[in-house]
Image 1 (cartoon, helix red, strand yellow):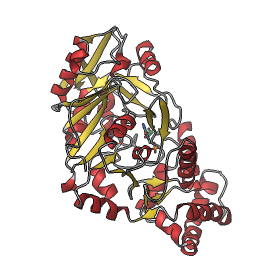
Image 2: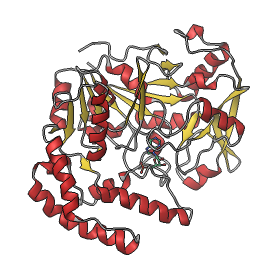
Image 3: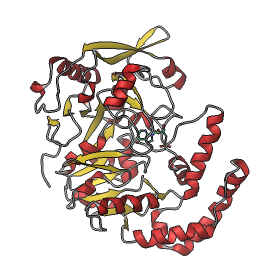
Image 4: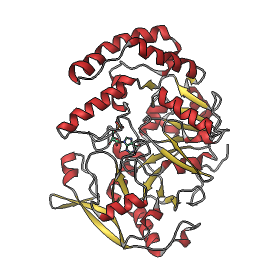
Length: 435
Ligand code: IMP
């Protein structure tokens, strides 16, 4: 048995969907533990592309249990749409294989309205975070201020209505008074809520019991991180972060799994870096090389379609994530995207105030001033998408990978050389027992 977490080490979009899907084959339970439908995991299975936002990637295997745990914020409307789309493509979804935590907080329409209103006001003063506009931050705010409504509340609509009535006073006041936006009526919201209650009541359970029981039985559990460590609300580039904890610590907080039981942490590293939204990005490449990475890597948001900012691989940042999460193997993704570039670079250190440093400065002002120091590798023109072992990779690529491992102190466990499942070099057995 193994309890394995898959964590993004950068600013999200490291290609977690494909790796999680591959690992799911030997897992028995797959758990989303944080974030919401700000995430977008693209999977290519048998030539078919699936874009998942809330449903754990394990859903594509009918014999697995997919869990949306308590740390996730759920937009039930989005979840219904996602389930309908998947079912239309023949994916089996029932209360048997999808479990939703009664403690997971609900994203209500006013959360989205507040997120978008706040961002549009902030844009006028150039203070945007660049959120996905999905209501993630406002939903987590309500959770922290104890104003949230949870999936379990859908099981008692009378109480739901009473609580919603109270909450709505404050939300409408903000929306109308401060943001000059429209208010929400209790009746129209309750109409939505009643439908959600009908559709989801069979799926809502105490997911901690499921996870805990699976752990006790020694079954393989896969924890599917969304976003990346550098977007963590506590340890990321605050305030340009999301509102949850995509770090390995978030596994425990968001699922209830006792921290001592997490056996292994796989850190996803894209062979270059991307970032959506605002915030410091020391290795960002502006101009044609950046445009080329964006185009070759199809770096446009799965959730919002926004073009991603692109740049060189930043080993300082990845090392920080390795240390924060106890990552013991790396999965390097999208290596094939580097093909055709005249040269490839890795940032090994930063220069800050004339000092060479090998850590991520905590202050945003300092990180914004940090100048990356690069090591440069020759480019490669060969098609690497058919490589099935490390020896098939061109010499500069192998040197690039070795250097990354050396800089961050962790070996590679998976190398992804193309979008499809079989375009993967597996160097480690993450679930040695197949329970
Ligand atoms: P929010 O999570 O929608 O509040 O957005 C906060 C920040 O996190 C913004 O910079 C978003 O672009 C970023 N973000 C949220 N989810 C993802 C993701 O799945 N991939 C990459 N960036 C994300």
